[in-house]
Length: 436
Image (cartoon, rainbow, N blue to C red; front, side, top):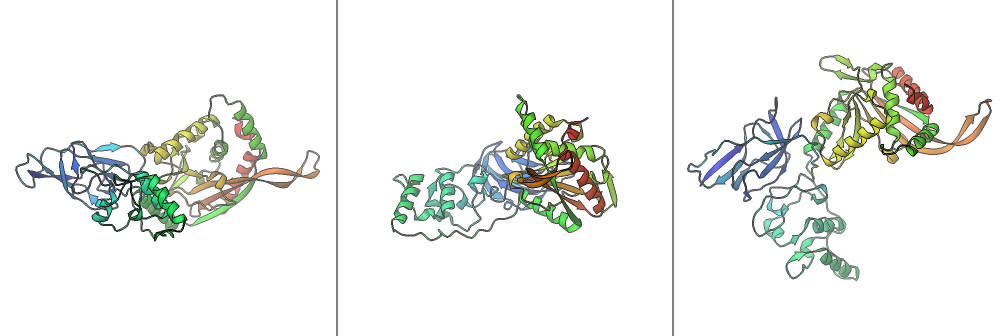
């Protein structure tokens, strides 16, 4: 019997350290060869570490959110057949690098090394990677408390949502709590029985780690370093919505057109006239890079947080191609299959909350870009409209505000206002967008 020390291998060119975003084992677990040990996050990807040996985990290098250096001990495994204590055993296998989105949230990365987090089983086994729906707040429990409660993740989540302490619920004869036991507990308390402490909700402390921490750091750096200014303009989108409905009616098996493909096409038509908006600013070098191609980022909300997948060469795509690419990238971001190359390299970003877009927004610039554009929700309201003879009348029109945030070091207010007015002309006359 000896100990195998698994050190964090070189997982990418120029990578000196990585963050622990999820443990799949804890001290005392039996791990098989090729079994998952931990997920490590770098600036480029999430890396899944696999065990090169079979044995029992005796040491782990910290908790989720900790950053360790390449070459440092990650896991120590007690292995049969190793004669010398502290031996490193066979050469480690290469870590499996998954080109996927880093979608762990602080709670979802909570497959903690603490025995209180794992469901009690008859024998130790590597803990399954939790989903956001299974995430639990960071709380102080003891192994004896956890050992008293047997329940599935779904039952635990429902109890948490209801503010029920599982220790106060009487389980079935086999000792495992089920949804029926929660129903009985609720029914009893509704009839005047014992009211459990905690129904008012518990305080939570959730570590900001993984992707959530990266988002926080990037947003803080953007607001700290970039002098933002905002510009908001109202657009009459009545004609565009009519055009969109007509195109969708004859789309066949092509993807449904939303507002975004029209907006992106209009933006791409204007950026050659406003190159200062399609740019990066390296403030350390004092260099602005203006791009000829439009690599347009689409800010997308995912279970793991805000992602910005990138439509490459958006200026060369038609409405249908843009719609298909938006759908593909949004799905890849949500299910974690997006490659790291699809999540970097944008030159300007569009951020949209759809029907929840509000009246106006002041989006934060996706540094090192210098501009971000946010369409707001569409509303119907009466407006004065002139007919062909110049006579004004009141009509019900569909309107939408579009908000812009710009880096005032690179983009002047006049430039932003001029761009917005030209964009307004295209959006309000959609035939100009469709024209070659």
